[in-house]
Image 1 (cartoon, one colour):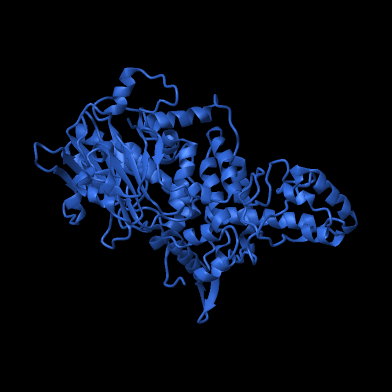
Image 2: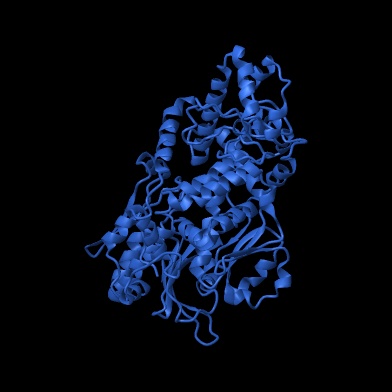
Amino acid sequence: MASGSVTKEIESRIKQSPEHLFEVFLEIHQPINNEPPAILIQYPDDFSDQILKTAANFVYPCRISLDDQSEYFTFVVLDSTSLIFRFGYCRRSNREPTRLCIISYYPWFETFCNILNDLSQIINTKSPAEVEAFLLSLYNYKVTSIEDFYKNDGKEMIEINNNSQLYSYSRPDQRKLPSMLSNSNFTIMLSRLGPDLILRLFAHLIFERRILFISSKLFHLTACACGCLHLINPMHWQSIFLPILPESMTWTAQCTAPYIIGMHSSIYSKMNKNDLGDVIIVNIDDRTIRSQYDDLSLFPKHLIRSMKKDIQQSSEHSEDHLARIFLRAMVFIFGNYSSGFVIKNDTLDFDRGVYLKQYHRSELQTFMTSIVNTQMFEQFSRYRTYVEHQHDDHLDEFDIELKRFEQIHQLKKTNHSRIDPTKTEKVQTIINKSDDNVVNPSLSTITNVTSSNVASNHQTVQQSSSSTVLLHSSNSKFDSDGTYLLIDFNTDKNSSSLLPTESNVNKKIVVSEIAHISPKINSKMNDSQNELQTFDPTNDESNEINELIQQFDPLNHSIEVNKTPSTDIARLTPSIYPSISLSEANESNLIDLA
């Protein structure tokens, strides 16, 4: 039984309204001999927090050769509540003995890396007074409230005027799914791991395994550890999350609790592997996953088959296509969460036992029982109960996809109910003759079916613990886009839809009344469909994606790059050599990163 209120801040572990744009800025000198790293610049000066005692260890998590290419990376520490994340954005240059770090509650990787890029130039070219003036303006900048930000269609430019020079940064819209052009972590994760490994990683995340990323590049650890969190949207990781693990904290990797940890390969090579137990090792450099769990085999087969097909095509799609594949999988698995709502003491609550009753003695019982008992689902169900209490009309991408599938499913049922009962014998003949019109071919051998039974099959989805018939009429408006409306979990036939159905559910999905905002939903659904357009690899958008990968990950060899050595040097050391102009950076929403 879920109890207690869980707000968006608690469930997401992201502070909703921080007082300042950032908490503290630090410039930290590299260790000399055996001395710890020294803080050279701290702003504000009066900032006092336990994080100052550990920040240097995260900024310098291990020894890295000065010959290694420069990079940006991000570590995560908890605030005083031991619940909310704070993000430490770091800039490491192979031409400078110091590293820059800015700690903030905001999960805005691209934005803060752009800020660090500018700070590096200001520190190297301006007076200390100008540096402090810039930091003061940035620290006191009042970010638009979430409500006003949404009213402005999720757009805000953070503008800092420093000594007659204007610095502008785009605020990301956290409601949107990560796209190939806007989210560097997600894009580089796909580039480094590839579709097959990402699908396996998704399965391990759903079961809350202990996941250890290994790489010789701190940025690759950041990209994969932070990028994989987008795979489980709308849920949020509730256990240990350390994208960068300092060498002084290697004992954390031996914890038995679920975790996502990023460890530099130099640290991993010194560890006793036997102490790690059943941890899942994701070697980013080698593009391999070592695991004793075959979690992917526990998922409904049609779901995984459909995801594999779509993921293989994701590199040929623009915008948020890849992220939406995983979102639809989450809708398929958890879209009927509201069937666990109960009234207890005149108050709406979520009952895990009630929710699981619908899977009793079905093929999904073991699968659903395992994932429903995770911390992620616990917090997800509590938050959704809280939303129902608050009568919150705000729709996230999960709600929109769920509503879309419900509308498609309802329309399909309506079309089935219109079939003339006098023609059911002809329909049955078609079903028996065509394997393509039956999800489970074994069902086509059943010939002793009465007309009334056939008509019933077109009006409702029959409850069955073994199989489900899919009548795929050539007159359906959904044939053209290949959207099937039912997924049978047992069949070996192909299916290309991720849709929660009633085939293994003993009661209908209960959803909130949101009829008064249907126009907004329909508009959003139309927009999302328009975004999923296949594009020519030679066009401008594909080139932008390749440019994004190259700017954030110059070590990636999966694409052709034509750049001069001098350009590479400029990207490595923007504070010493000329870098891309601010206008170019702001227009492309990219950062100048080696």
